[in-house]
Image (cartoon, rainbow, N blue to C red; front, side, top):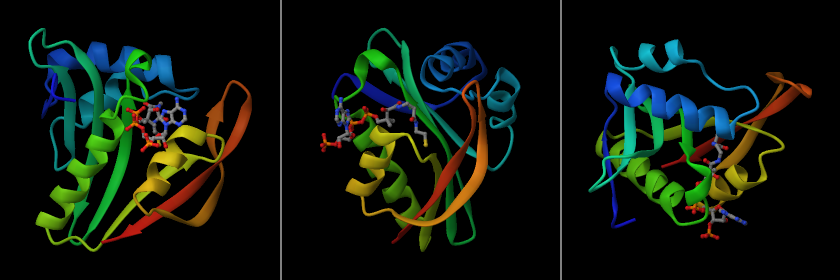
Amino acid sequence: MENYKFSSMILEDVPAVVAIERQNCASPWNTLCFYSCLNNSIQAYSIKHKISNEVVGYFIFEIIVDEVNIYNLGITHELHGQGLGTNVMHKIISLSKAAEASKIFLEVNVNNYLAKKLYAKFGFKEISIRKDYYNTPNGYQNASLMCLAL
Ligand SMILES: CC(C)(COP(=O)(O)OP(=O)(O)OC[C@H]1O[C@@H](n2cnc3c(N)ncnc32)[C@H](O)[C@@H]1OP(=O)(O)O)[C@@H](O)C(=O)NCCC(=O)NCCS
């Protein structure tokens, strides 16, 4: 992680972010979805190599009064399993605590074993199933709505 930094997502980052999103997701966000996160209360971060500035990941969340919603999180395939996702979760949790939030919510595909493992490590619990939440080339898939009480 010492080679990477978190920085506010800027317009120029979006093409690289969309490429990672397409690499990772069966029902990816499109370019407009990412653009729309840049101009409002949503917090969008890029993860960049400290020297080359290459975008290797991103995370997007919003703090609404005392609740936090994580909307998206992705790391480029080549760097999976090297601790970046864990660092992102530490960052979101610490910003959420600083804002005196009491809960963090997120949705994850019930079949997304790696992401569920990451969230479980931080104590997220499934509180509900959202049926047919994701429209993928393999059909509709359910989301697990997860919550972490801070
Ligand atoms: C989910 C994701 C963000 C995790 O990012 P990451 O940088 O790989 O995460 P980390 O390296 O910090 O690993 C976090 C945990 O995931 C699990 N994990 C990661 N890679 C793994 C692998 N190859 N095999 C088994 N478990 C693995 C481990 O439990 C790990 O924790 P541990 O190392 O303490 O045991 C990443 O896999 C990703 O971008 N996935 C595609 C997009 C996605 O699913 N986003 C979430 C949408 S809700």
